[in-house]
Structures are given as structure tokens and as C-alpha cells.
Image: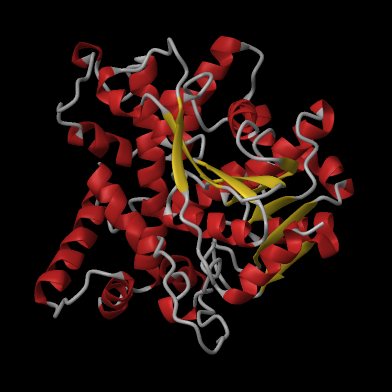
Length: 422
């Protein structure tokens, strides 16, 4: 599962490499191309002195961790500290992403260049976070995930305060991490735990469920010509492998990957499928991890426990690839929440996973800002209308860029830096 995950995400999350030079406008006006191709290497923002982030770890002593996940007992995060006093900004990754993914490293360098101490966190839906820090072990329910993030951020603050002077706190997150940031801001308004100066949502969903249903709709049997999600992913891998074997490869770098997915000639259905598959791989990893941690017997039969390091996991991955988030909600998450509180309804879970639930707070929260794109593929017209109505001039939405596609473009970087300044 991990190999496929890395290859697909590498294709979708091409990291930042950019020569200095003329700034060109963002090139893709097709939102699906933008989402998959990102910002071409030669157009990306160039850091003058890019900081080298430091990976750190926190361990919850006494926490029960399945043997198959023993390598992930510690919760890993990344920091980049200033030499002198500075505000600390927490950065939260998108669905299934790790603290040191390509986008997170880019954002870490960006906010460090803007003058912040930076602490970058994995998404609460990432396997390492679920194993090492999740309070319930059942990710995907926003109130639980936000509570977990708040607790972890407190631990990190305590650790960093011993080695650097912190003059204030801010918060940012992209994609699902952006939605989490909004809920953390609302929570902090009640608890005054951090007193955030600035909170920036980067390409957030307005409704988690609406956005994931949109992504899952691109992986239905009808859209995939009756093949399974696993078969479709394997087909793409075969195409990429054939291209690699016949290409004149001098460096397996970002330019090669960009050229490969361009030359293969993917059509819009392929691009939608790749975007949906990237999300499905993330959610499959999340569901499998939760299932094993709780011994829920959703994917893993009871007589297969306990899983050990070295056990073949591909059979479970094949099963997980065909589980949509809607199925996860109805068959796993909702029954768990009803076990905790029998009065829980599906409608309430959906409501609490969208920004509409905190609309009144967001309308008056001058500190909370949005940077994104009007053609973001995880948004529909009502979502864009929500962002423009609620945030007004606190939202900067580019006409084109898809979902985080233009995040590394200089215009987007300039907007982000402007949003985090007091």
C-alpha cells in the first residue's frame, strides 16, 4: 500500500525546485490539470535561503501500539526555528499528508522566511498521527480531530518554549488542514489557550463530506468503465512503468515526472481519477490503521490478529481501496460515534464537519483569512459563494489554480505572506 501511495502522491505533489528569473503567470486554466500538475518547476517561488526543517518526535508513554505499527510509536513533526524571538505558527497538513510532505516543507520554508518559528504537523488522518496521538483512534470526525490537534499543539508549545522565545501564536493549514485550522480558531476563542493572531485557511473544503463525496464520485464503477479502483491504479502504474523503461532518463527528478504525466496524454477522466485515487489511497490507509488499532474487524478478519511486521498487507489494501468515505461514515464512523452517544445522528455528524457549523464565528473573526482558487475541484458553486460571503475581503481566491495547484507559484506565496502579517 505504501509504495503505491508514494508514487501517486509524488505525481500529484511535485516538490519545489525553481530557478530564479522572470515570473510568469500560472499556466493552467483547467482545474484538473492544475491540481495534478501543480506549479511547473521553472515557475515556482524561489527561497533566498531555504531553511532545513528539523524532524522531531513526541511519545505518549504507555500507549498501546499494534506490533505492525511499532515503527510509528512516536508522533513525528517538523520544526524550523528562528535564531531570536519570534511568533510560532502551527501548520496542519491536508488529508493523509505527513508533516514533511513536499507541500508541508514548502509551507514551512515560506512561513520561516516570513519571520515565524514553524511547527508542521501531520494530518490527524495520517497513519502516524492515528497510531501515536489520536484520542479515539477513529479519524475523520472533525470535532475529535480538532481536539487531538489542540492537545498535540500544546505539547509542542511546551517543548519549544524551552529552547526559543515565542512572542505569539498563529495557525495555518491547507485542504482539510485549513478546515481544521478554522475549527481550532473557534475553539481557541472559547478557551484562549493560544490567542492566535492570524489563522490562514489554504484551499479549505467548506463541507468535508460534500468535498469527499465529490472526489469519491470520480471513482464509481460507471466512471471507471467497470474496473475496480485497485485495477485502475495498477493500470496507471503500468503506464508510468512503461514510460520510465523507454525514456531517456538522466535524473529521476521533478522535471522528469512532469514530462512523463504530460507525455502519457491523460484526459480529463484520467485526471479526475488520479485526484480521486490520491484521496482514496489516503482514506484507505486511514481506515486500515484505525481498524488495526481498534481491532474493529472492518477490514481485517478477527483470526488475522495480531498483525505483525512483515505480514502481507496487500489483501487489506485491495479491500480498503474500494471503500468510499461514505461507506466509512455509515459503516464505521457513525456506529462508533453512536456507541459513545446513541443520540448521534448522521445529519449532525455531517453538520459538525463543515464550516457552516461555525459560520457566525467566522463572519466576525477578522484574524481568520482564506487563500485559494475559485476553480478548486473540491468546491462547488455554493462553497465558493460561502467563502466570498463569509470572508469578504479576508478571502483571496485566484481565478485558476485548482486544488492547491498554484500553492508554489509566487503570486500565491505573496498572498499567503500578506495574510499572516499582523
